[in-house]
Length: 141
Image 1 (cartoon, rainbow, N blue to C red):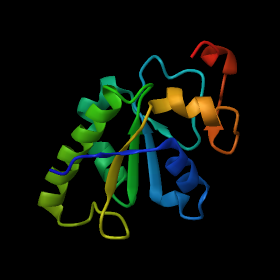
Image 2: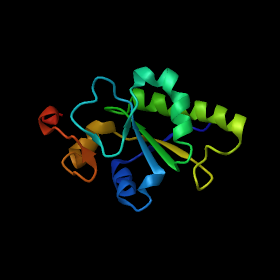
Image 3: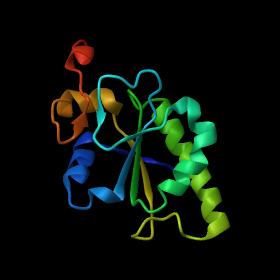
Image 4: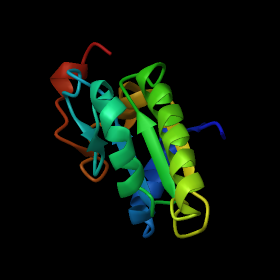
């Protein structure tokens, strides 16, 4: 099994603004702390649901070239979810061939460095990159 790499928030922001943004999936694994905003287009898959949702995620994300996981800080839940995704994807690939590799033939899995806490410091008020942002929630971060 390969290991996920970390992706800088600036790199993700650039990817999401590119014409090929549809090839990137952002998975936010925050649970009850999923408040105060989220990366535009991100899918919320609470970490407490991943044991049974991971096979579904692998199926629905199989055409994506890049999958980026994050939580609030990307220290625990985000990295654990990325590793779980890789294990599940590798099992699916072994059973079905290379259908889970994205259109370029290779799907890359990342963890957003610093999580949403760092993301919102730079991009929280950018409506092209962040949805439902509530600055008052983050004022003491």
